Length: 119
Image (cartoon, rainbow, N blue to C red; front, side, top):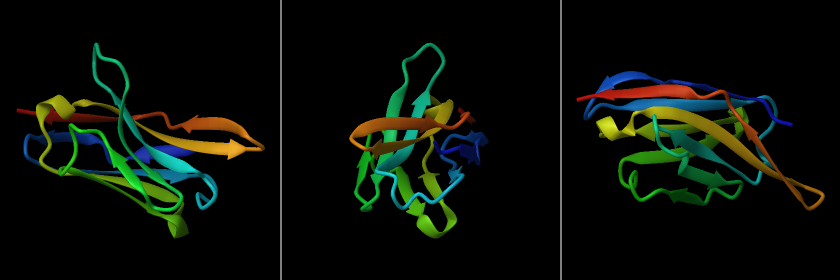
């Protein structure tokens, strides 16, 4: 199991930026993929971005060109740089880690960090 702790959320005006961090309790080198989901009030959880152990990235269409995901293996941390924030980006953002152990997939989750974008 991997414990994940998010930080960096907060209140920002539309057009502003935030950087979320997700610190893992152990090395992330062998974790297959890490990333971020979000859940807005009254909506279902949705994938925001993910990054594989090899550095490949995927983004949801609604954040392309605005958000950038990265990982620092030396610090066991994944980041989500969010620029040009919009009020519709308001949500709780959750970090996840997807692992495969002996052919079985596991997911670990952080507690979430609130991002609020005011208009």
